[in-house]
Image (tube, rainbow, N blue to C red):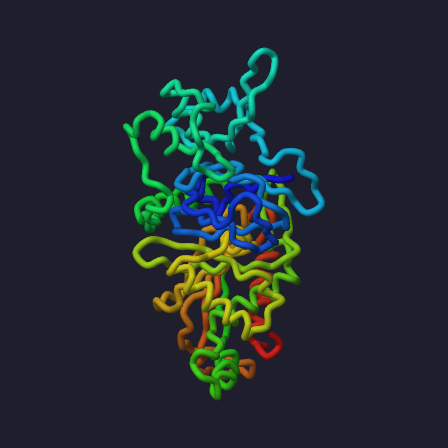
Length: 401
């Protein structure tokens, strides 16, 4: 048996609100199924399960805000034997009893045993908030009927028993909250300040001739309807993924005092949420996707980022980030590394500039400013320069992507 925990969707997330369960105890799930919807400062995220199994218990109520890493459900994985119908929390009952009723739940629900005449009573399943409020009201849990999954006691059950002095809306009546723009800005600022404070950034920049690249892309799209055309953004992501195979030192995470390279290449794309901030969903296995498929996925992820419906794997898997303000006419963007990643690439707007050709002539060429911010604990300027040089060569041979 294992536990599903509140996932982290970025360094700027400390807690999330479970606004909807998509499963119930006894349901079978397979890897990739959506089991819950988590509200964060960046909107509602669909939480996936990453293993096959059977849901044994839901350990938090809809509407509960819990810290990252807190168990929220238990699951009997394929091949694992379960000895009890519902899993108990790893945190002791005493720890739950000392928690403040207004604090974020520090654990999954625990089930208490109260000895009577040397024999234990039946186990009682209750959420942390329900148990804490019952203690506050001095109510005996054994005399209350639970309305939650598997008969679990919820906060609403305790309030109802106490006389409904502080009623809460049932889960079905809750309205999904929108993005708190102020909180989102604060979270982004805190994460970026932490990044600049703890990560020794170094910055490199290079100007790349894109004339042949854009000519190739135009010819490729000429006979295609608009919805099937490949945009320059997808080409940049594909080229980034391709060169990271040759520079794996910039693809991965800095954790526990050391670099952990990633075998997969998941390119995060910084997407603006209008009037709010940024989200960085990942295009998974970008190096393995054909260019057309990558373009289709980019459109899909961009739409869901702005409308809601991003998946937890997309929000937590990025191994490097790409950011671009080219559509705003900005010639260069110098990014801040999004921890625990170790690098971020910035692409500016293509613009026409005088360019010295190989034969010494001067022509008007379309060029792009590309920047790299990288973590000096993991790499140095020599390696970063190699990445930019490889990226330039790759972009000038787009037919190989």
